[in-house]
Length: 329
Image (tube, rainbow, N blue to C red):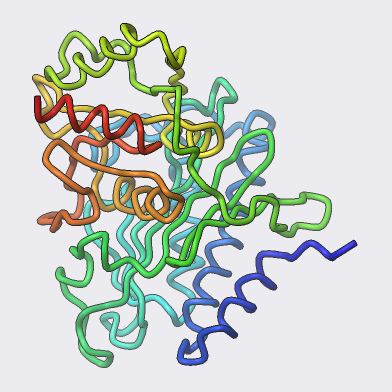
């Protein structure tokens, strides 16, 4: 029986296949896994440690900030900024980007992160997650980093992933050579390869959309939901958790589409391009899925601001193609 690889062993094996890689990306991915273990531990003991509920303040998104939001953000910022791989960090929880070290002169990579997605579900013990994205800096090493280093198209990502804190903790990531999932064994504190070469089922039957939004969403989404109701051949079903990572992960395993559409009062939707949509779109495409906004491919969008929002549709090819037709018909 072959030995199950740890995340560290898997990363090192992949690095060995690319001799031109310096090792900084390997260290960075390792740092992310360490921070995620800390967050996983805090999430699992939240009800006992008195860290449920909100802080009484709001974040840059004008959303109620949960105590675990702050803990997760602090964990990732502390560990990522301590390493020498990172020049700058953009966090969904902070208005301004964080510049590491000497004006970011020495680090090779930019990290964009949603430290704790779906945190409003913490109090009711529903799955939540972390989403991260890694880019090479565009300014030369030795110079201070600037806004352009953060505002890059999704096609420029060198790695992206998410961590799901659920019945087990899973880390799923891609570096552009497929998608692999690792499950944390809390007994030994290691992530082990449990889901190699993950793929979206080409035919999905689940659509994930907040039904409360349907009265105010734009016409294409209404058409899509009606088309699912009218088509009895595949027995479509609605499933919505309200945690993007959890909904995305379920659809990746079983097939489906996640939808956060344009709304009459929010024409750009709610989700953040850099912190949520671009990294999950990179994963989706590497896993055979499709990710779009109202007018095209998510990964082709040029960001114009750090906290930019965009309508989002991601998942199995058959369902995203139906959504595309609803936008063009």
